[in-house]
Length: 436
Image (cartoon, rainbow, N blue to C red; front, side, top):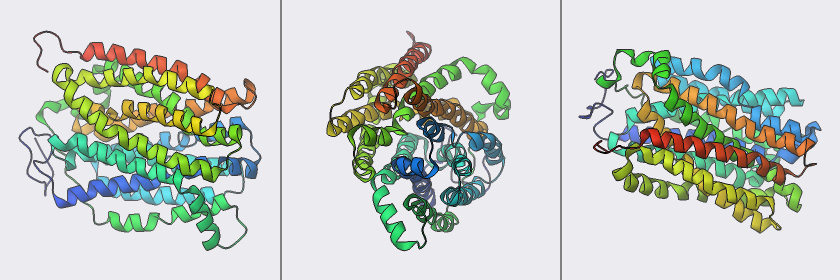
């Protein structure tokens, strides 16, 4: 195993530091807080969709494209080159540049005079999802001891989820505070984006004090560890099934996540602020509540099934999510709809919680950032299909009934995800005499 200078003592397994350092622990917390703040603008945008739609006079199809495609266009062009850069140079410097760029794009979105420019700003802000998150998941194995890696991944996910849910819950407060603090006749949602962008400066300053961890390269990575093409060629079947599971699941999840606020507002004549105040806790409870469940299932079932437990959990959850999404189709009241949404999100969050750990197990250290960037791009393309398809179905098939459009989009995708999960489970399943 090789590491850069200034590294912590390596573990016996050669897969990371032997123990936590204070700076490493604080760096993981900073990474989670940063990604959480950056993700909170998606919640703010989701709650502001009706106002954005009125400001630019756009259709449901355009809203679906905004929620689905924005973030894919520019992010997909930048993620893999940036990840290659991060695999070779300072990940800390790349991270600071991403924070600055994301903040600038949030300002551009707030001040955009027309929808194409707003769409471009939101697309460019997608570098957070495409480049920052893969970068973080490549750093965590070099910050956390091997025995704590799952907990570090789940802790990071918890902080990100808290930020995303805060964007929903505090959307009304953010808008009212922004209107009070920022002068001028800008729309309230524009001022809210400007206020949220102000978090970029303290994040940049705090980032200067974080650590830039060395890379722990295990000897098992081999000489071809830095060849992305060779890695994909050797593992293409397992990677293809992995993408099928996570990608199809994202069609269903993002079709609901990105459009549910507008759908509930339209169906039940609820105010965006009220929807945000309820959706925030739902997202938080769903994403945090599933973590101990996932950790327990992984620890308990892995004794018998090894790594095959992870696709098994994802496949079962995909099947369980189908009746949940069908219940959403027939909800008769807003409280009932909130309960169904919470159930669906809890099930699908359980399915997704161990995905980063699965990919880290599969990936050589020298390729981690690039693999996560490629994974983020491919899955985000699937994610874009969710709101895009639901928006088109709403406009041209079900005459604006978004809850129906979300349901029709989700069910086939969940079935595909469950099938891919079963196929990967069969490949990973321990055979008689195999060590688990």
